[in-house]
Amino acid sequence: MVIGLVDVDRMDNVTLQSAGNKLPPARDAVRSRKQMDSIRFGSIFLIMIHHFYHMQKPVGTVGTHFFFALTGFLVAMSLMKLREQVLSGVVTGWKAAYVFTTRRWMRVLPVMWIMLTCCFVLLTKSDRTHMLWHYALLSNIRMSLDGAYPAYIAHLWWISAIEQTLPFIILIFMLTPRHWLQRVLACLLIIGPAFRLIGYHLGWNYISMRVLPPAFIDIVGMGCLLAVAMKHGNLHLINLIKSIGLFVGVPMMFAALILIQTTQNDLYKSILFDIGSTWAVCALLIISYNGIGGPVGNILASPVLTYFGAISYGLAMWHLFAMAWMTKFFTDAPPHIRAAGSFVIATVFASVTYFLIERPVMRIKERITPKQTSKLQTSSGVSDVSMVELAKS
Image 1 (tube, rainbow, N blue to C red):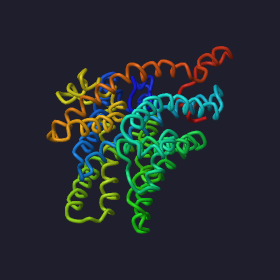
Image 2: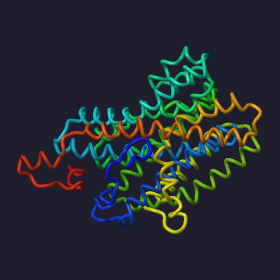
Image 3: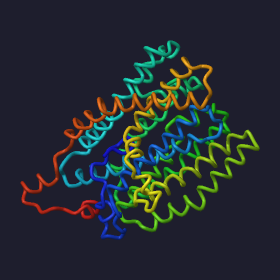
């Protein structure tokens, strides 16, 4: 099952049970994965609605922040597995970083490059002078220099920014001692707000404060911190993040929305709303990871929503392309018709690329892994080493 932009092959109860069963086991790991898929689709849907209706309120920002937090969470899960293999001598740190980066780029780049090619060939000529920036995962840098979002590919900034952040995250996980890891990740939480605050007072263009990696490393870092807390069984920290997200983050978001209505001061939008939404989406991540019961959980685990969650990366890539075609051929159509048509077109393209590109690539990607720890230990006569023992070494 693929969740977000990073696959976690067996995101099951091992993570929750690895620290002496300090955390209760998830009710149903398969069900919780389906629910996370559906919530991921909900995040993409918010982004699509934001773009389809050209909304001024930061509706799509909530979806984007959930993706950042989810990416950090899943990246941390994968890196902790690789870290254990490095500590046990199965693979070197450089090899682990290479495997992780190769697998991730195989997941991210093919669909993105296909979409870019379609945009440059069929839709726009004005952006072709900067096309190499976008192919090279430098879209956010180009947008920062231009101070504008390019048509049809404006959404690529978050893919580029995340990929530029990941080498730094990899170094943190490979080099930081275990007992310092949570503290180092907690320090990332102040970088994003500080960057936006400094940029605001120095008069940077607003896009630079939104698309450059330091602007959101606190959100990715929060997802990483949550994953480490779950791995190490830090129930106190998990409950703290959840409580702050529900009782502080959500009210802070609504307070920021009210302030946005009464003032044009971007400081409130880029600081207050972003901090509130970061904590709120992490609370949602905790709830969905542990599984949601009742009618809401049944809806989230339904096959339809799960399918849309599976193709959500394709929806993220294709929805602006679809909107461009609807705008071109149905200029006089009501906004709701154009939005519905754009969603249908994006769903078709996302489904095609999912079955023809993403799934075959995922099967190939599974072969690019370090040696299994069990093989090395069996050949050397060493008994199995628990995850907790590896983490303490």
